[in-house]
Image 1 (cartoon, rainbow, N blue to C red):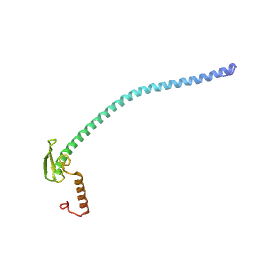
Image 2: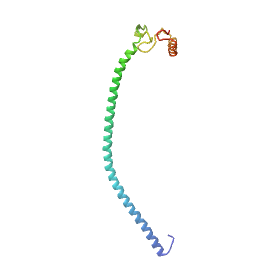
Image 3: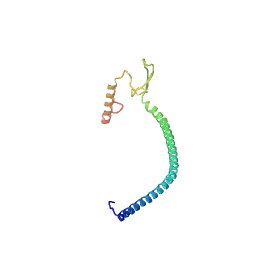
Image 4: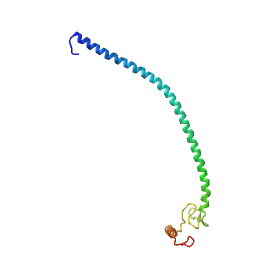
Length: 151
């Protein structure tokens, strides 16, 4: 471009114009592609939105079905466990004691010495009781005593 002669300037000018024309052609092609792409994207977004809506509805239906199934299973378990729990809790005889401070009636099992809430009576030393239970279990496991004759 530093050439001073007329022919060199014309040659350089031609090169520039060719470069610029090719750039302009590429720009036009890209703009056409982008405009077509926008149209396609609009159509695709509508289709995708419809698919997403359908998927969301299906997921919601599945979730509600799962919740209903889980609730039914919980109800079945609660009814079965409540029946089993009442059978299992009644190991020994029931001893009813009224608490003087609260006025509530506690039902203590004579075998486990626990009330319906799972707590020991106030007159029982819990540490000694647990030691006796542990001693009984170890003796039974070792085969030293029968269940009926231990402590």
